[in-house]
Structure formats: C-alpha cells, structure tokens
Length: 212
Length: 212
Image (cartoon, each protein chain N blue to C red):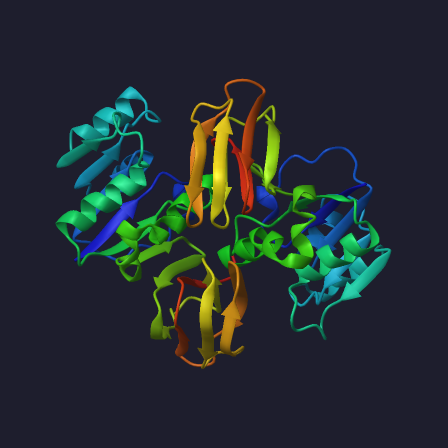
C-alpha cells in the first residue's frame, strides 16, 4: 500500500508525484494543498488553525475522515499521522511531501522521527521527498541503493553514531568506518545504476539529490 | 569581528543582511552571489567548477584572497572556510547564509559541522540564517536566548543525546529531561523577550523561525 503524506511546508517544493497512491493524508495546511492540486484527500489531520474559514470548509466537505489534534499535547500532527497510518497499515510505504523548504525545526522533527522507538522499525518504508531531494532511511545490514533517474548526487547521512560504515559501488568508498557523531557524507555519486552500503549499528539517511 | 560566510545554496533564501561585516567570505557559487548583490568579497574559497568563465572572471578580478580546494579531498569547501577563518580569527562571530533551501545533504553537512571536535568549541559563535530561520548553537551550561524581533517560534533541537534539558520562560517548559536521541522540540514560543535553557551534556541548536 502506497501512502502520500502531505505536511504543511511550501507546496512550491513538492516533487512531481506519481500517478496514484492508495491513501492521501493531509496534515493541517497540507490537506488544503492536496485539494488545491485536485488530488484526493482521504484523511485530514491537525487543528487547522492555519486555515481560514473557507479553506477549512473546502477540506471538511470532501474529506473522508478527520483526526483533530487540539487536545493532543505530546505529539506533533505528523507524529499523530504516522502513528495513525502505521497502526492501520503497518506495511505501508509512506512518501512524505511538504516537510522541507520552510521552518527548519519542522523539517528536523520530521527527519528525526525515525529515531523514535515506535517508528524506527518502519523507517525503511518512509521517504521524504521534495523537488530536489529524496530522503530514505536504512537500518543496520547490507543494502543496495537504486539510483533515481532524475538525481545526480548521493549522500549517506548518519543520524547517530554508526559502526562499520562501508560504502561500495560509488565514486567515494569507505571501509568499516566508525562514525562517532552525526555526519553527512555528502556529494558522493553513483558510478552505475546502483550503489552498496552496509553498517552494523545506527541509522542512516540516504539522500539522492540534484542541482536546482 | 563579524564574518559573513556565503555558501552556494539559493540566494532567494538569504535573510536581510545587516549593514556591515568585517569580513565577507564566499564559498564557490556563494562568492558569485556576494558580487551579484554588490557586497564586498574578501576571500573566495572553492574549486569554482559550478561557475562559467565570465562568472569566475568576475570573482577573480575583485577578490582579495582566493583559497582553491581542488587538491583537497577530506574537507568540504565549507569546512575549509570555517577552519581558515577560525585559525586567523578565533573570536569571530560567523553568520552563514546560503546553507539552506537547496540540497539537504549540504544543509546537514553545515548543520552538523559543530559536532566535529575542531569546531565544537567555536559553535556558540556560529549562526546559520535564512529568510525564515535563524539557527544558533549551545554547549552545556545555563543560557539566556534573546528573541529576534522578526521571529515567532522557538525550537530546541538536540543534535545528540542531551542530559538534564531544562526549558524555562517559554510557552512549553521542561525539567531535567533526559533526551536519548536527536530530537526537535519544535514550535515552542517566547512569552517575553527572552527564554532560558540549561543542560549538562550534548549540543543543542536553537532555532528561531517565522511563517513564510
């Protein structure tokens, strides 16, 4: 099951979306952006404080399900949305848009969500995308990274200390590097249509990107 | 001494700059952007591969000092620039622009530089800014955070595990919270013109932001 999760960051940074997702989830202003783009809206989550009366009406008249978060103190709307989706669809592949290009505290909250024990085991099914970057997450093990056709650069960003980081089949390689603190191994490049990475401890974001 | 460090991210995301810096440093395309904006360019750092012949000529004819990085493999241009500045001016207050809004591997490389032992002790003198966000860094201790006039939101983003995180004089507070992994305490707000934060271990980014 493919889920599109639209957060409230600037719609101008959204990537080109593929034709169809099985479930469209909008978080606060992200729900409005889905409608604005003529896309379905199955679930809307948030307190919708950032929207005016007409925008709210536009959402509520067409959405299938609404989860309001006003009473919720300990979770962000995105955490609520992710928990809601994964509870009903633990196998879901989740593409998140609208999480970049605006407030950086919001971006980091979304970027670091995979470190929470409740989300960590699902992290390999979560991808953050915008019109220049694609961010997926890897847990310890041996992995093949498939090049996305429109991307040029490849980066391995260690969100935590990482043990035995080994990079192969890419322009720059590493052999069992011990990474002691969060580090962005940026500006690597594919040399074919895939690259290889392995590590024994920690969590890594693989970022494929292109120039603007 | 106030230093402006311009990296190569989109100039459209630059903040309003204050009138005068003592030193203007451009990294690769950032050097071109400084000239384009009619600002001084004291030092240019990079391989300048991203620029065409005329753009390069425009830089080289007016810059006071050039540091070329072609032979350098182990450092990004921004690391080189920071090391260069801090070696000559260890007390410098460094404002970095052009580090957000483009490639996220670049942003993370800049954001995480303060974790490197060689830069960590200078981290409280480094600030990343764009037109919506201001990111400064704190080391263990007791701190007062002064509200920036044009900002609304306040976030405490733990880049590492953080011990005894205590937040006061803000909308949301915490008392000796043990933070086990990188976490963005986003969307807090000032309740006066300052807030207070203390912690005993780790490193924190304080992000002040506003809606776009």
